[in-house]
Image (cartoon, rainbow, N blue to C red; front, side):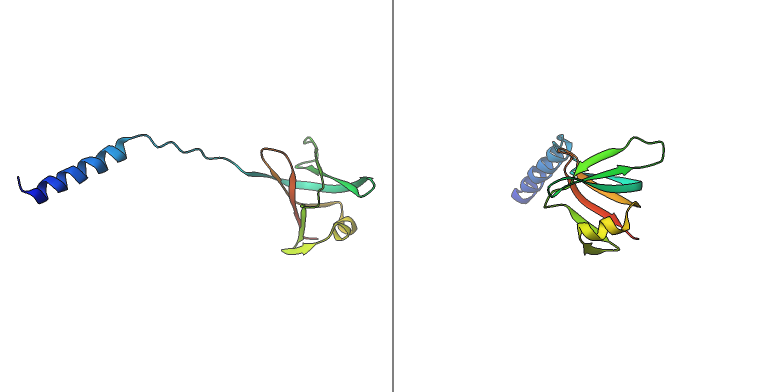
Length: 110
């Protein structure tokens, strides 16, 4: 066997071994969303707000604290808490971190 053929078979063996070995990758869901039939927000005290989302009239309500990092997006444009308060209750999407439940975004188009 020539030297080139030996290298070829050696590389081929490595490729086959790598393809046959199990891949250890974890897929994690970083954010989750609720397509809400009703989203409301209430003031809970000095500068503290809470968003309540409900997927359907008979579905369980889910509550989220609003943080300084929470984004309010109306029709693709960055909005404010005051703009959201003026249009509620509304339908839309509430996005939150899967691991902590922290509210990240409220999207609506009203």
